[in-house]
Image (spheres, rainbow, N blue to C red):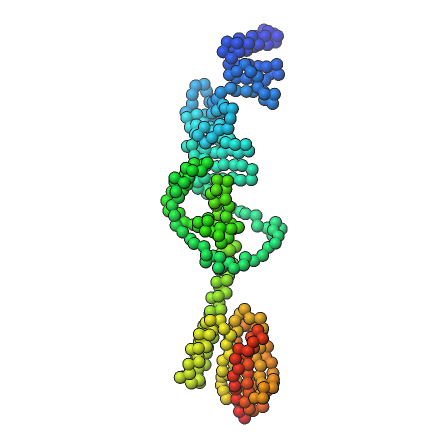
Length: 348
């Protein structure tokens, strides 16, 4: 049988098939249609009217690829690309520029330009988020971080199943006791980490709270360090009083209270009187901008200025050889304000 006869036979078979039951139609372009006598659109070379399965052998299969025919958008219950005998598991097209993945009729993943929604648990080996300095501008340290954190409320909760049915996805939320924050409460404190979707539901960028928590911890650590310095000064003061001061003196108690409140302090020099060397203890808050101890004679004439560059607890040592025997005044100045003035006596 020559080629011309073969082609004629194929044409006759196709024509008979098309006329009889419209199972297969081939137009003048060579484009084929299954299930209709109308040719496919100009962009296509094959058109299937209705649904199609793709088994490896003839007959129905327990599981094979199944493509549903349709002329409109699909949904999570009738996905376009699915599987025979498991036809609520697959891919569907609910809107323009939007596709979804469904399992058991529940939306699991939804994709639209620049956005991916995942409904359910997500497990991964690691998650990296771009944070390169070259991608950022207007970089500033978070102000008032500790006060913001103190306004947030950590809660435990369970999801409202009925509420999920009011959304477009109708996907079940995790069951059991959960732990986290309430988006509306967070939005009042740090609105930068809260997003509201088209349906009005609010979500939190939990990873963006890391910077806030780091700065809050640093602020809290500074407060703890200041308190530790004040406690150390209290202990040193009590020790000094035990080693030579009047045991009935209550100034130490008052000084301790002042220190714990963050106020600058000036202590009595020890020993007093002295003839060789004496020590002046002081406390200066770490947020001070300037400090010094002035030595004056009893007429108020300035003898010497001792600049203080390290804040917190400190000690200034006075050598008797630098002064003539007599009575002197010493004054602590912090941020250009007098904190206190005391007397010291140098003997022969």
